[in-house]
Length: 482
Ligand code: DUC
Ligand code: ZN
Ligand code: ZN
Ligand code: ZN
Image (cartoon, rainbow, N blue to C red; front, top):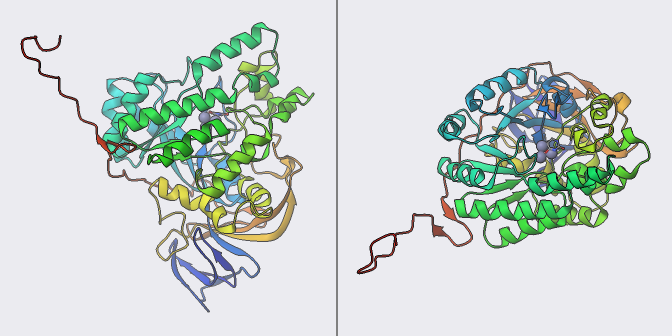
């Protein structure tokens, strides 16, 4: 059944112009004037944009002794209600678990998805088996591998493991991702704070200062350059990390940075709230920062040194957060945001003039589609692209309330936020998936999106130097190797 979206202004990462869009068979089939279909969507006064892509979610993730409370069903319902038509989640193998087996488990969980999805594969342990399985993971449509430089004793990988994995990514045309925080320093700061009697959620912020993030970001960048591979830094929260990325890009390295909507808009003062639950609900890693860092992130999005706005959606209920009563290190780390990313970014970004409408589309959809190698199937309003489309009403308003959200948790870190500019109608795969408050996409209607490998680079981009094994120097009269 063909649907004509009529009378709107198409807004892409490059252009804004008036045209109708005709979708059929799950794809965009035509863009032009006076188009008609079996059904018409009136988009007058609205912007017609590519569906949002959130490249950083944790749905039903086993973490810190529990599972995050939004699964692929409620999580993608929240996503669609917020104008996000594709999520990229993290497959986390257990220690010594086969990557392929873990991937099968994640495919099972994602069977409930209402929106399209993909996975990043996390390198949670290192060994011959992981090395051997990485090509199979790539063949199965996953071109990104995540590395946690924090969570010592759990998810953290060491530098030698990270370097080995980065080199393997380079060979395979895959890209490493990093959660960049120095896990050793965080662990010792946590112990110090606890020993000094600092046990509340505010200590979470003190245990993860911007230095630990800046150091790890720099380290990951240098290791990636030596491995001859591009790098994607998730949840860039501060100037120190942003600065490292800027510098790397200036040196010619292909390094990407992803701030979260939370870090752009919420600050460290949240942890000083006298209500333990209020503060604990906002505990995530990296923690919220001060205004100086927020300004840096906004500037990076406008100037292009940072490319993507994500959520790291990892939702825990208040009850789960209370696992950390009396010990902040046991508060499950994570906040929600999937449903609110577009509305909050538009309100704080476009309405204030910090971002143009086209930059908004770039950072919520198009840039990540290119980085993850799914453009122009995703992230584009073009004939042939998937019909994942947001009809966005810049005049619509709402007050964000947990009471009316699709997410399964009992609070919202944006509670009370006055949003202006909202998705009104969302198409996913050519069907109306959300309209005026109702999610219509059915559980299980989402599809897995394969992301093919890129061409391997295998050179240090900063020097364009071949990464070949150096030859030993021949010396006359002295035995080799001495
Ligand atoms: N940070 C979080 O806050 N939650 C999930 C994982 C992470 O790195
Ligand atoms: Zn992380
Ligand atoms: Zn995180
Ligand atoms: Zn994350």
